[in-house]
Length: 92
Image (cartoon, rainbow, N blue to C red; front, top):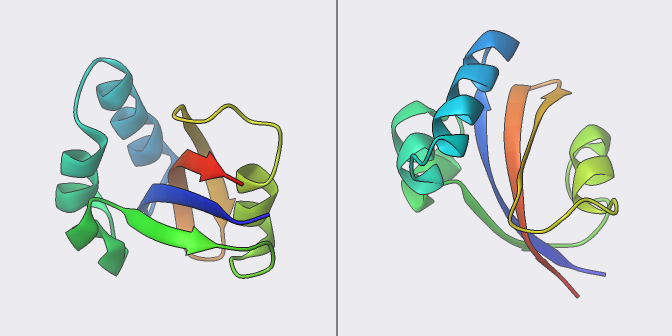
């Protein structure tokens, strides 16, 4: 079951929570990603494209392929890379 998602990667849980609050208050996810994410995907507004289970680190996969709602900002999700905010765009 592939999915599409976008994310924002930052170094600390505190920064992750701060950015989540900004998005929940109406800030644009893609714009926040572009100016704050440590991942090269920031140039695409955090868009990771389509991927299947097992292509991402386990902690990330666990969120993406869970029963979590689509188009909702999830996180912080801690991985070896840092802290992520994740938005699942589709699963099929």
